[in-house]
Amino acid sequence: MKTLKDARVGETVKVVKLHGEGAVKRRIMDMGLTKGVEIYVRKLAPLGDPMELYLRGYELSLRKADAEMVEVE
Image (tube, rainbow, N blue to C red; front, top):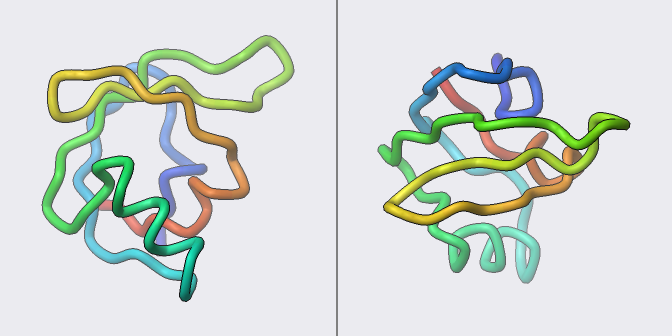
């Protein structure tokens, strides 16, 4: 299983499934990370956390702890 955390800079991935439960999963979905969405990994912060993503026409910064809950292909 590959997660968003494993995606490399410059890579485009597609969301397969969201893990997690309750408020955490809801918050991730509210940010636009839903099944079938394509995500482009723009860059990483100097220490590797957070990641800067481009999806649905906007940029999103996401912590790696949250990115680990997003299964991608």
